[in-house]
Picture 1 (tube, rainbow, N blue to C red):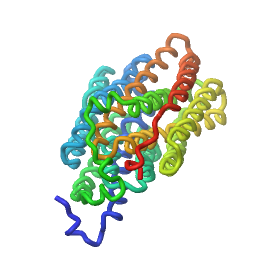
Picture 2 (tube, rainbow, N blue to C red):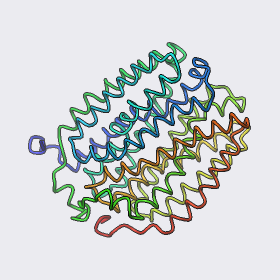
Picture 3 (cartoon, one colour):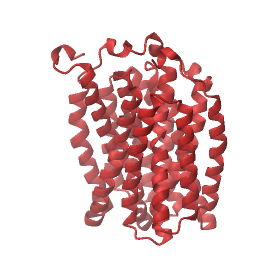
Picture 4 (cartoon, one colour):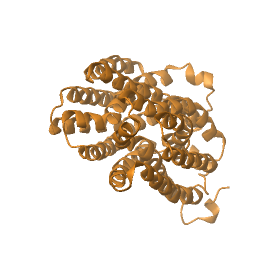
Length: 409
């Protein structure tokens, strides 16, 4: 039910920014917990379960693969059912997943949780849900709004690792997971009922975008057009490189010989730089050719990979972290901009659901890097391979067609 008539003192033009703030909070909790805090659990889990690095990285890979598989289904659900109940379903899965993870006595128990419940949480309460919600409320300044919304992942990446680092020292990893569960329920549950009691008026969706912005694309149309596949093939390597550097960061820090406490600070630095990156790509995405923005992210990624390849000191690792954050910050805004400006808002959830399959590509990279390390005692081969993959991805972006004028007006 539309609540605009009952709340005339908050017109859509202002209320939509409340929606953006809600999207920030939603992603901070879900992505912050499942993605950014994962690296902090790697060392306790290595000691607890006595697993190899490759097997431990399989945990996060299963989450990403599952989220990739769930993406198209979640996108369809977000386009079809009330967002409030879709998001609450994701929250319920998060609660159950964290409860079960606390009771894990073997690594395969975590694999099971991260392969089933956590992917549902990632897709129904994470970036896909937040960007779908924001795209419905914005036609003008959509890139800026998507960039602001995407900052939520980094808000979680800044705050939660600091909390988790302290909790791990004080209460151990099992009670830390319990604390994260209570935090999620306390924030997401009431805000979902409060904010999503209202929907945008139809006029808000048509003001700037026009009828082309409301076109419904079929699955076949989406999967047989180059305007889907060129961004997909460009963003997948960015996701692969970011995943490798982010999820192996704690182990890389230890291998260099730095204090393990540095990891939390570097994660926070990554998140700060990603905030800057998301704002930059989001703001410029409304004004600049998306291909040029992609090339900036591509070059920054290559720089980050090469710096980590030769990193032996903290300053070099800091510069690599900054480059990783800036390039990684461009992934979500660029995906949202490239797809929303070319496919419109009516099918945005479905298109983004397929686009989130890039997560599966990102899932292969950390486990592959861990496997390479187990074989050769170094990440060098993995890092060089990723840098080489970035080159053809950047070249292919030349052929991305510009958006239809009516859809980007």
